Amino acid sequence: MNEQLYSQFDDFVKGISNKDKIALIHDIDPDGICSGVVTHHALQRLRGRGIDVVHHQKPGEIPLTKKTLEVLKNKKITKVITTDKAVDQEPEIVEDIAQFADVLIIDHHKVYFDFNQRKYPHRILLMKPQILGSPVDPSRYCTSKLAYDLWSRHVDLEDVAWKACPGIVGDIAYASWKNFVDKEIKKYKGRTPKNPFDNIFGRIAELISQTECYDYRQMKKVFQILFTARRPHEVLNSSLKKYAKVIQKEIDYYAKNVKKLAEFHPGKELIFYFLKSAHNIKSNLSTILSMKYPHMTLITCADQGTFVALSLRRQDQKVKMNDLVEKALQGLEGSGGGHIPAAGGRVTKKDFLKFKKRILEML
Image 1 (cartoon, rainbow, N blue to C red):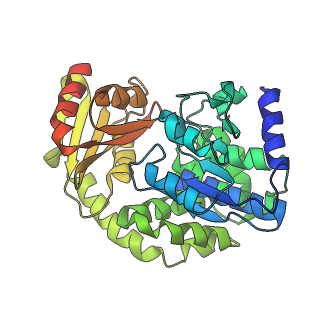
Image 2 (cartoon, rainbow, N blue to C red):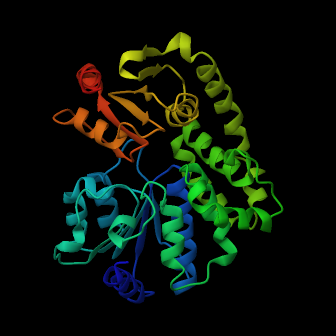
């Protein structure tokens, strides 16, 4: 274990004061929401109040944007914490932030740039499982669990441990943290069915994802509902249910008609699926279909105005999805990244056919 890095994290936490103005930038999938909520609870207990500014970017905006940089400047932020965001993919914006604020990055994507090896006007601390020396596959050491483990070094979070669990299940990491999740399920008298998405935390993960699909601008509401909830069933019975019903109907349609609507390339073990859904269901649908076709590379695409949004899955990990999307986007206008079994991104419409041609050539 990298004791020096843990020590630097401890110093970062000890350096937080009530005078600091802290911003949290979280991803909007279940792992991003849950790790952000855990962080919010930790800061509230550490200094008597939580995060001052909670911010998220649009779907597909993986690195930090110039717009986010301006928000942080205008709010006079002194410390920035990011959860489940591969912000080291484009380090320049993070380095710009370090001109006026300390930055703590809690994430589990692959390492693109190790800020820990450089000196900046303010501190940039990159906390990823592989840098910390964890034996757990980084794609399975999801940010929700990592955030819970890190903050638990300084504050008791036992009563909100369940809030990390939807992120764990949602990131297909249940097998790695089964004991942790099952303990929380038992605490709230839930079941442990074979499919983890059928347990109470899997259902919350789906509720979070379905709300994002319906309208990503609702994620502030999702964050607040999870943060204030005292029990899992408060989330399940919340107003988020109305979004889930609409989205589930669309997902069922595209899942049922995949053989009729998608492009199959058996020789390349590839499925290209361009959706015409009114909502952003590509990620949810990708996960569902990847379980049905675990030995195929699945790429679902959706129109997002000037961009085409991308979601890539391959459950047998024969092809690395993060490397595939990054290489296919090189030199094109867009961004992408993620994990070996699951990745995402976006590309401009004018470059989409080039992207598709590269995928076909690479597989």
